[in-house]
Image (tube, rainbow, N blue to C red; front, top):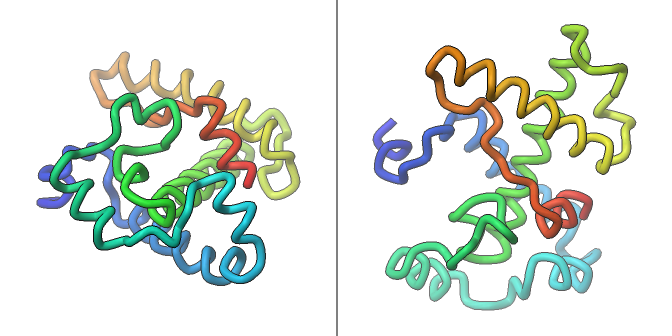
Length: 157
């Protein structure tokens, strides 16, 4: 809870943290030594110093207008963090769509078999609806993510 407040991350949760860390694991299992060139083309050069990137991030904050190209301010720090944040969002999308499908709100879209483009479209539409419902109760947005084109491209990766 202290980290959530100090980082000003209203949606920081244990499950979100686990999904982020699982993203690092899957980077090692699915990307490292397999498709690093495509990774670099999508997320940037992960061979840059992580320590330097972290220091720069914590001294200067996120890159300007980060919402256009990154899922979170933290994702701007280093390509590994960008991947982990994007991967965590992918898992969020699958989970929300799976819950919606099993609660009768999914329009028959199965996130385990649907193309990513359809998943993103449905998640965004569902997010608007759920956000409006939360706002009608004075609560924060359930799905605050803005999935601009570059972020959609990263999710497809």
